[in-house]
Image 1 (cartoon, one colour):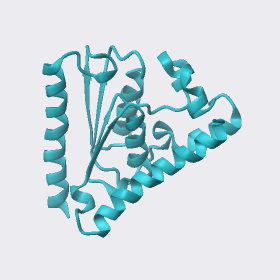
Image 2: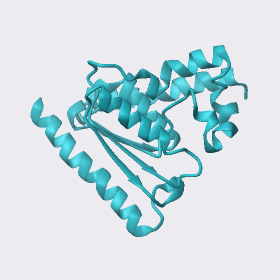
Image 3: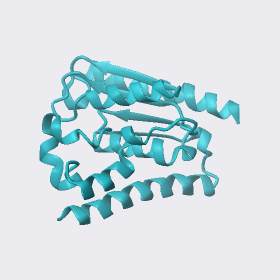
Image 4: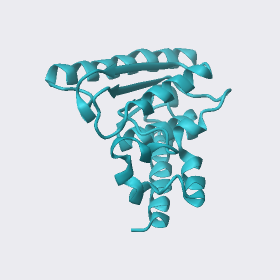
Length: 187
């Protein structure tokens, strides 16, 4: 598969996820204020795109061990091995496409971003924790509601054992309980 095919597929995945969220609202199953989304790794990238491209669809977003900086992903840990999937950010035409959806590069002031929880692991050997760290800092610079948790163990799963996995999920679920309720009361 060439990058050109992969790029079309990637854009479709983002649009498809957003379309499902919009359909849930259209059908009266939920409201944006009550809709939370969570994803990890490449799904963490998906959550970053939902945050920056489709913020009005969600009441809160949780992103685990996320890929957020598409300009530098290939210089960190396993990122070089993903260039066939994502493209080469050092190539101008590839970067033009990557830039359009790179969550880190698409944070802007004055947007209706929902609260976000970023979770990562210091010992992640696939997606460098710098992605989540930088994204949290960028969101805070712009005054957004961002929560951050970094486990010092755990690798790419962000949890080294069942106890840590339970803690991670408790953090996510409590984040949604508080933020989705808060957002619902605002509307």
